[in-house]
Length: 105
Image 1 (tube, one colour):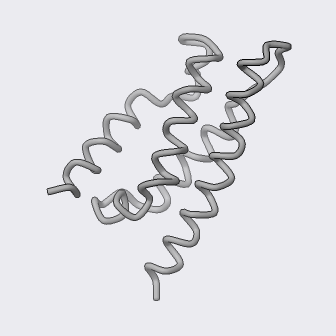
Image 2: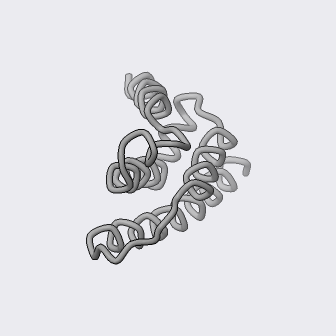
Image 3: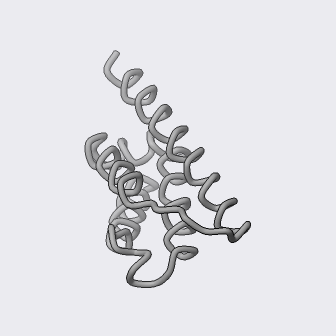
């Protein structure tokens, strides 16, 4: 039952995703975790919807990530992670919108 697996995945990921991730750990960890979550939404939006995760929950997660990312470093690795995150967020939001719109029809 993959729906249960996606419900569990969402629950587990949601528990570790916090607005203060960078403060609790470090910026690199925050970028990696935020990227992973945005990527999961981008790749599995329909699976999450099928498993009972609402579009609103996914949108809130993406908005929380977007509101809490901060970049201000000369570190090339952090810059690369930041740029990937911005791209993942953009594509996740677009795909979520498309997936939901298709779902309504």
